[in-house]
Structures are given as structure tokens and as C-alpha cells.
Length: 315
Image (cartoon, rainbow, N blue to C red; front, side, top):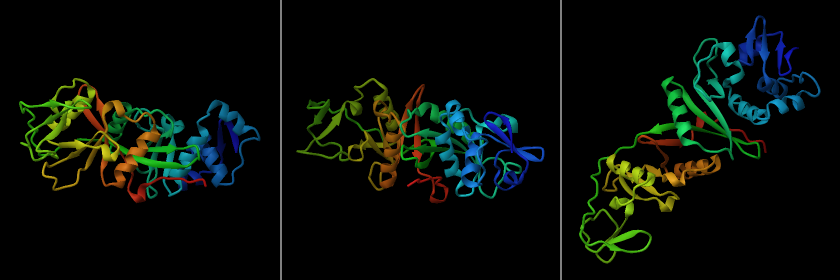
């Protein structure tokens, strides 16, 4: 083991690369960068380059602790991982903002393209759906899986997949052109004659709000109107902690597959985003986070299949 610079070392053996794709090849040896070094120290009994190495590297790379936890979560099931330090040296194509590339356990960088591209965030990191949606689409265009791993303050790691959804249905837009609309509380109107059996009734009438009437003119109404235009039958999502739930058919013959939050209630951090995703998956639905730009798009945050959950618990 010899130092290359203050944060890299060279190991005069390629067996770790051949077996586990640790580091990157360099002649008959490999170059290990900080995340590789921490992993080899924890899992290959390799000493740190010197006694003060960790203190020094953390001053230059404070994210290394979290990055190393994510690396361990990815590698524990046998995946092979290359971190961003190696991208340029290895001439690896990747989407902007990707932190790492992942290969399944039966694949290898020498022979196969990556199976997934990885980003990681702390649970309190800001949640930015537009940027995340664009990144996910770029990764999917490369026929790779966009994977996000979240680290919390207990040093546990949980994984998600992200992608754009295009929800559609066969419902006709509801007609609320009834001449008698009586204003009631919370910007709602009461339609006193029950001429639409799709809505819950009370005293031979039913309640609609300003979104349903097309009164609002903001990003929230743009999302509601987009859902209607897509042929979805939209109802309240209050019982699930979101603004709307949406059915593909208006006859309630199927459960509502979608839960949609309104733009001004978009999760602010990954704690809120993961909370919504877990609640939705627990009731067999997918939470869609609307991204309102030139047009309305929908980001889905999904729990991976059981055999693809790159999780880590330190307790």
C-alpha cells in the first residue's frame, strides 16, 4: 500500500477489483479513493493510510461518513459499486448528479454496463422534485435504474426508486354547471339538487369546491385540471394525508391507484417525502408529486422490490 496523494492510495494487487470491483485498475494494482478505503478498512482488514487519515479526509470531504454508509448498504447484498471519483478515469457515462454506479452481483464493470445509477441524500436534505425528475428521466434513457438512498441520524440507510408517471383514465369531466350553487364554508359550494350520482350526497345535494368549479387560477388548479383532462376521476385524499386521490374509472370498480399532493404542499425534505411514499405503499397506492413547469408532470417515489432494497441498519 502506497500513498498516491492525501486522499488516495495504491494497492499492489488486483484481486479486490477482480472479485468486488473495489477501486479502479492501475497496472497490476488498484487505486482506492476515500469511500473505497473506508470500505476496505471496515470489511477487508486494511489499515488506514496513517493514524490521522480519517480526521484529515473529513475536513476535505465531510460527506464521507454518509457516503460510506450508502456504499456499505449497496455492497452488502453483493452489488458492485463505483463512486464518482472514478468516473472520469474509467470513462464511465453517467447522468449529472449521480454519485455512484451500481452493477448487480453477477455483473462486473469489466464486462457489463451499470444496472443502476445512485444518488444519496440525508433525511433532512431539501427535496427538489423537478431536479430529481429530470435526473431520473436521464438515467432511464440509458436503460438504468434511478436509485436513491437516504441516510438518517441513526446512520440507517433506506432505498427508493424514482420515476415519472403518466396517469390516465376513462372518466368524463364532471359537469358542475348547475345554476343553483350556494356558497358555504372553506370555499365550497352546495349543489342543492342531486343531479350527479358520482358524488356523495346529503339532503339531496352535494358539495363541490373552487378547484372543481374552475374558479382557482394557480399551480394547484393546474394540477387538478390536468388530472381531469387525463380522464381521472378525482376525489378528496384527506383520509390518506394528501389533497386528492384519483381513480382510473368513475364507477369505483377499482381502488384508486393514485394519491396526489397539491404543489403548495410538496414535501420540503426527504423525511416528508419518504413518509408519504410509505403511507401510500401501505394502502396499495402510489403517491404522485406534481411538478408544475411548462406542463404538469408527476414524480413517483417507490419502495423497490424486496430483492432490490439496499438497506442498512446500524442498531
